Length: 138
Ligand code: 6IA
Image 1: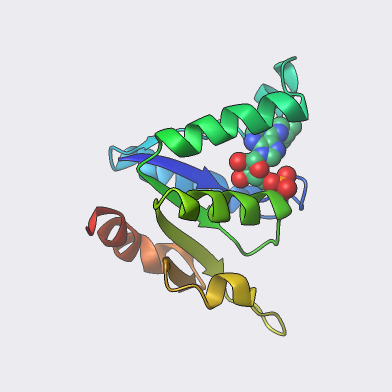
Image 2 (image 1 turned 90 degrees about the vertical axis):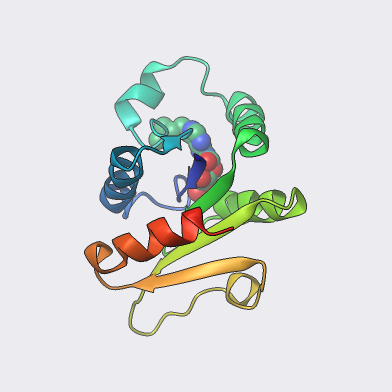
């Protein structure tokens, strides 16, 4: 599957390590991750073309090209919310991964949307099989 993996960037990069774990995991399971390098600050900053205009156009093209969007939504991000809604408008399959946290709740615009499969977790290892199964489900 061609996966568009989304996660917060300007919304905050606190969960960047988890994003890398998910991306590695998908690649090891023979999926293509279109966004595999976007959280790599060194690669991104080394690329002189990374203006907002360039990023927007490239990412929209990748979403159109993808089979599925997997979004890590623990750290709220305007960009990720936009990407989810855009993918929904194209009838793409959408999986959101949410790490449970005390005194916080996932946005109702994600939690209440029946077109989105939500997988909650405490530890990434617990949900590995579940994610693979959901990715391959028709
Ligand atoms: O509003 P946000 O920046 O948190 O939105 C994050 C989402 O927008 C991600 O899922 C990406 O798909 C997309 N996005 C935002 N910024 C970039 C970017 N910047 N490169 C690629 N996609 C992006 C350059 C990388 C930066 C670490 C220097």
